[in-house]
Image 1: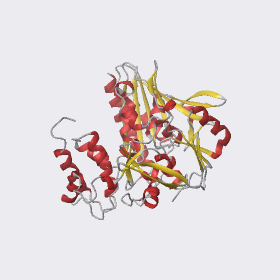
Image 2: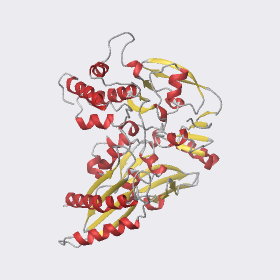
Image 3: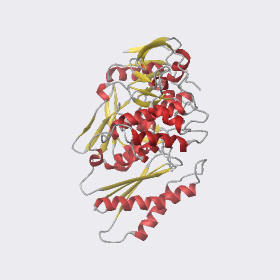
Image 4: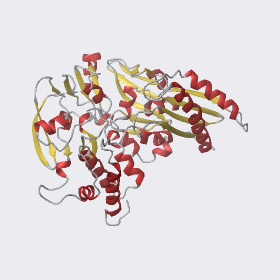
Length: 279
Length: 168
């Protein structure tokens, strides 16, 4: 199918984009890489009256480290981030997860912030942001605000972004000394939407597991691990409880039971891998 | 700021396979339809129209991308390469195309132009890709004839031969 009619805007600055968003609000959609939005437009699941293209805005095409975060502008593609020198040292989880994001051909256009703004429950970049407790920077003519990942994504393809706001950047926490990270997912085919995706952080006697593809948004839990103690039984119980708490449902791709099994088994594997990297 | 109004056709110009081309497109027109219907370049195929199958893959500024997930107006001023540009008209096929012919890497041929464009991007970035890199790139395409063995054999041959010995 083909998209509905819309006016296409190519602002020259972020301020112009914000003016357009203030004017058109809910009738507008922002496009950067378009690797999720164009599919929605073609299927007429999205039918905006105005399309605001920010892909070419140099102001949003940057990737830089602050003291604690890697800040990724809204025009940065997934391929550009993956090619960023030193990514595996700066944010190891992103270096591990990015090859699972779509395909080589979609990463060439798809942006990091676009994936966050789209908010697919099985998508890897929101999962990494939730697991690392990162944040999203939103800007409107009213000002700028920073939302924690857990406050930003509110459900299936739903975020706390107001209609006049633009996602201008994502903040992914940098690797902390002594911490270990691991990522794994189960999909029918590499690059397909994940049935379940898992991200783990081991640090300072804590284990944190993020799960995508089960609940309507990424969910994460943190557990304390007593030093020198084998966490086997407790971890099994904790993972089982978490798997049930996620409330997955049967769908065409997998049963809820299969998803719980992945959380229990692959969840343990990624936590152990993260713990090994940490030591 | 540029505004292109809906329902009106706007002039779109870009470089296609090294030559400047132009045509008219409404804002909602996909690059696939612009290439095929407006420019008459039907080498780029249309499959799923939501980015899954890869039949429409072209290169924009060198990067292999889905033409069905790109608006024609977004290609303005860019450099677009399609399967028509892989070999000179009536000239010899490229090494990749010859390998496809040799290994029977096309059956019905519908997915072929997209796969050729993806692999041509990969081979320019990485003259000697390993098996994982080849699979990652070919994995972004669906061949409904399931002829992947021939496709991979052709890709492996080019990966082994090309580049004259310099390391990646």
